[in-house]
Image (tube, rainbow, N blue to C red; front, side, top):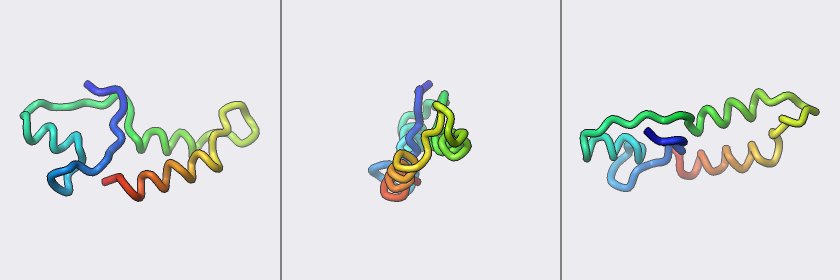
Length: 70
């Protein structure tokens, strides 16, 4: 069990780091939350509320995903 799966590329292949771990060690991994969950939360945050986290933060996260994500 991991708290947060950043869904990043692994070092050895085109698999994600979590998929590489599962393949190499034969141990299943379950994430409490994923990078995609975070992006969905930010995209659906309510404008003007205390939970409005879009804008700058979302842009940075999407740039990170584009560079390191699978």
